[in-house]
Image 1 (cartoon, rainbow, N blue to C red):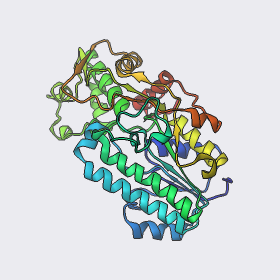
Image 2: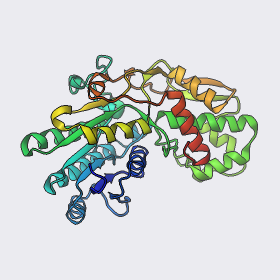
Image 3: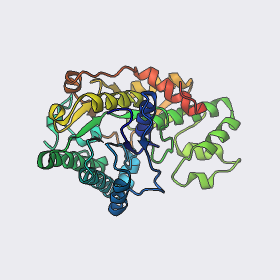
Length: 352
């Protein structure tokens, strides 16, 4: 990509899209095309086609998706599969029709089988059944990978697919109903800390800035704050987390993913990458240790209580980093450093 090329970044307001946008700006790219959801509905094929005909982007980065944690995936599976399939199909097909030079499709580690051998290599895709708690989302993401592959094979396009591990960072979603694991836990521990300190003004400020979800915001008033926060597992002497803390997860700061996207867009094509590539460091952490790390960063002194009536999710999801390392890229930000960055943004809105 040259700095004068027109780049369409789909999903620029999201966690990953925002990190990519900041990285492109830092590198001096000024011709970045974006659209808010109210301006362009990516599930609407005619709207997407019209947009591509008008803008004629040189490059496309597809970071737009409907995302969420276990609860959101289980509650809205039809929305997750429909919206994500439509977004991918419309953007990928329009990119082909308009002659886009290169497209980067962002997927997810959830594409891999529930009991895939660890660490998960790219070739274990579709070798056994998926994790049921996010199957709808996974099927949509697998469809996008296959779309890119088959368009490359049939039409000679240069569409690449990156499968990042679990992301967190600046601009994350802290709505307790739809958030991913780390921001959900980070906020739960923070609110518990504020209860511990009796800092209700800080709690009110937080609740004005971020929604709780599950209809709790409509019930909230000055007299029932502790009762409402108990609903999301935050108490003055403890924080309640789902499962038993035994499962393992990878975590990557979104700034590292943005770095990988930029590197691969600039240096590697489909002929070198193949159907997909994992974007990972190749290590993970047991959730009980992650919870302790978050508690330390936040400074909460209460105990961690496990709700074993809630699901753990996939026992382990560690992706193999052999391929991405062979392409010349590795992440740079440690987990603790990344959590500190995310917590600083959550508290102040400022980027470290």
